[in-house]
Structure formats: C-alpha cells, structure tokens
Amino acid sequence: MENSPLTAAELQALYGQPRELVAEAWAAGLEATTRAFIAASPFLLLSSINSEGFTDMSPRGGSPGFINVIDDHNIEFLDQLGNRKIHTFRNLSDNNKVGLCFMIPGVKEVLRAYGVAKVVNDLATIERLGGVPERNRVAVKITLHKVFPHCSNALNLAGLWSPETWLNAKDEGLPSLLEMARSLAESRGDNG
Image (tube, rainbow, N blue to C red; front, side, top):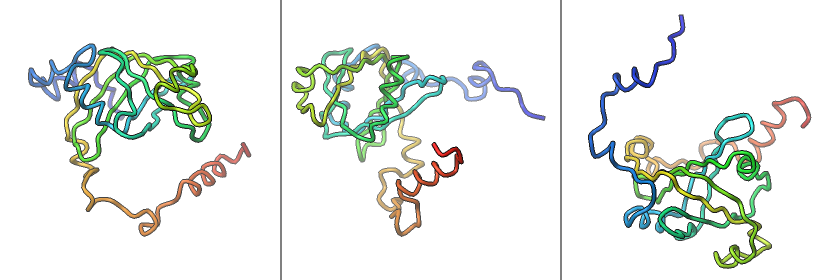
C-alpha cells in the first residue's frame, strides 16, 4: 500500500522547527552581504516554469560580475549565445516567475532568490552590459521578491568543491554530451 503524501504540517512536525535566525534569514531585496555574494558569483542556476507546469532549470555563467545589480530589487545579465533552444525564454514568454541559485566555486553556501523576469533585446542595455549583438541577442532583467542564503549541507555531502571527488569523464567511461544527445533522440523512436 502506498503512503499518502505528507501535508506541510506533517512534514514540519517530522522535521521540527528551524532555529529563529534560519527562519528569519530572508529579505524582499538585496543588502550589502547579498550584493557582495552576487558580485563574486560566476555561476547562476535559473529556473523557470514551462508550458506543462514543470520547472525548467538552466545554468548561466560568466566572469564574476556578469550579473549586474541595478538596485536592491533588480538585477540583469547578458544571455550568451548557446544551443539556440531558448527554453527559458519560451517559458518566460508565458510565465515570468523565476527561481535563482547563485554559486561561487569553493564557497559551500549558496544564495537563493525568486522573482519575476523579462527578456529585453534593447541594444543600449546589451552594450551597457558589455555585450555585442552578434553574441548577445538579449539581456535578462529580474525583479527580486525574496532573497535568502542556503546552508552548505548539500555541497558538503556532494563534495562539489573537493577536487578529490571530481571525475575524469573519459577515464570513468561517462558519455559525452553528443553521445547523450544521440541516445536520447534515438530512444524516443519517433524520428523527431
């Protein structure tokens, strides 16, 4: 017999209450510590919601500072031309809600946020952010609604920043991106 899904109240009872500081560690916008974290972050996971209602996560990266903090509630960054699938942008055209996870290599804590995003193809914005139209077709502007830190537990457990845990994909026999792409396309059996 399958268990029924637990309610939010049942889950909270199972886990207990967070410490007061943990529960209170959030704000509706940025302040000095979160601005500093974003300024040092070269990597961002950006989640959006697709047309089927599922979350869709996309990695974004650049040199530290690639995410421009406009003010305490607004950030922006250039899109780098990639696989041209534009999943995130398609999603944002229907639902502008996003989740963000800012990461810094070697730092075990992460900064999370959520808000609403819009995609702009304004040449002045692209150039102001250091972009060139041939490589940077659009910029993403996000209005933050909630910002909060996340503890190091997951990254510690994964050993993500510990070189001794890193695999050499070729030595480990892991499939390449091309091999995975071909296998996934073939596995559908629908020729497209």
